[in-house]
Amino acid sequence: MTSASVMLIEFLENHSDEFLHNWRKSVVISDNDLYKEEVLNNGVKMFQLVKRAIETPLSEEEITYLAYKTALERVNANVNISEFVYNVNVGKSIIIKWVSNSGIELRELQPIIEEINALFDRFSYLAVRKYTEIKEQQLQEKELYIDQTHKERLTILGQMSSSFVHEFRNPLTSIIGFTKLLQNGYPDLPYLDIMQHELEQLNYRISQFLHVSRKDLIESTREEIILTEHLEETIEFLYPSLLDGDVSIDFQCDADIKVLGNRDELRQVFLNLIMNSIDALQEVEGQRQITVSCEEEAGKTNLQISNNGPRIKEETIEAIFEPFYTTKDLGTGIGLYICKKLIEKHGGEIRCQSNDEWTTFTIGIPVESNIVI
Image 1 (spheres, rainbow, N blue to C red):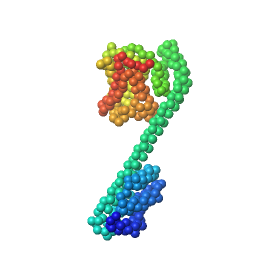
Image 2 (cartoon, helix red, strand yellow):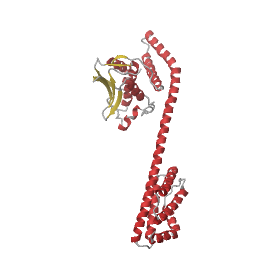
Image 3 (tube, rainbow, N blue to C red):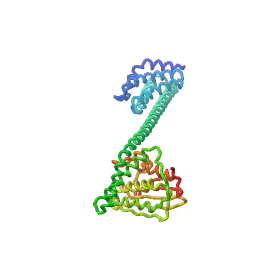
Image 4 (tube, helix red, strand yellow):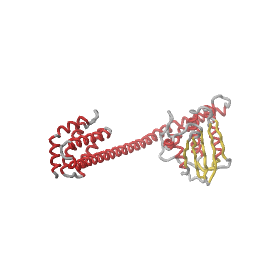
């Protein structure tokens, strides 16, 4: 140890109370910080490390211990790390100032000042890195908890919807049947067609919950479907909704395009996408347009359903197919999730593209569909 080091250590010890007093006056400590006293104690410990570093080089373990302890306290205090960084820099500035005013020649002080700077920089780096690691771990644990909670919600929803379907679907089926009998017996009776349409819509919504309540989608039979006819039937069924929403629809599809799949499941996908388009178009002033087109290419049937409604943001497009994600005030957030699952069940894929002019849902289904049954 050099004579300058001995003199400096003695100088710092003689003025330690003044140094710590000045540091305590300058530091920033939040009123709600649970570790106020530890902030001050850590300042004292850092001051002791500085004195020891002047005497002999410190081990990495000595610096790491105090840095990690401080980082954990900053995390538990739930205080912004910027306060810690500021307080460390204040301490470093005050010590350097006191060292510079010790009366020792600058030539002898220079390597000591560099050592002090290196100590503070290393301490700050280790503490901030540990703080970040702990925060990231907490975030991962939080995300894991959210995922687990989400799975539990799906389980609960499955139990609730299964019970709901069994208790509600039987009387609903009876009402639909008697409504059809009334239509056959009294074809001119007003409002029956509206009642029938609304009952079918209700039955469709119940089917959505039935699908999402099961871990695996229900078994289904497949058949050869003429896509044009199936889409025309769906559009005809939705005619009252199109009329009520003041939406025009342009349908272009080759008459001979066929797919191998489940009629009811594909109908549910088409209904959902067109109904979503109708809902989105209610936010548009002026012409409200939906276009439906399909073509067969390279052994795959490509169906596009587009609307000139509001643009879907790029960061939102992937999320819209997740369960419970919805932008509607009264939406359930399961419609597009079910569409995705049903199309994937048919060996196909569904994607969305959106710009300022059009939002387009594209469905690709292999002609010889590998539907899961």
